[in-house]
Image 1 (cartoon, rainbow, N blue to C red):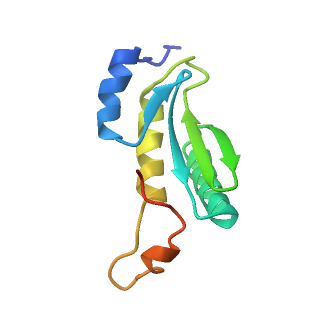
Image 2 (image 1 turned 180 degrees about the horizontal axis):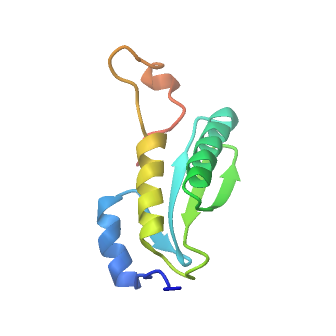
Image 3 (image 1 turned 30 degrees about the vertical axis):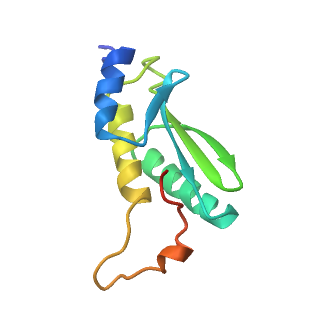
Length: 117
């Protein structure tokens, strides 16, 4: 069985250019989502959990009242692989999605995610 390619820190930083809110620290690519409070935090955790289970990828999560930090690494490869970048992109796409057209969503002041600084 061939081992998945793992990336060196310099390669990881280059690949993270496509994921501007993500960074590499503590052997994982990670991002913190600031939320509007506990209910919103649970929505983010549930969404990330569903995506990762469907993708057969298992992140480390740090959950607080108004934030969720997602940490991705491929445990079986003991490093950062293409799976991590693909999962980060999917999480970013889904968690950051905002309704358009017939799906108007709540006013921006009631959004469950706070804007990135």
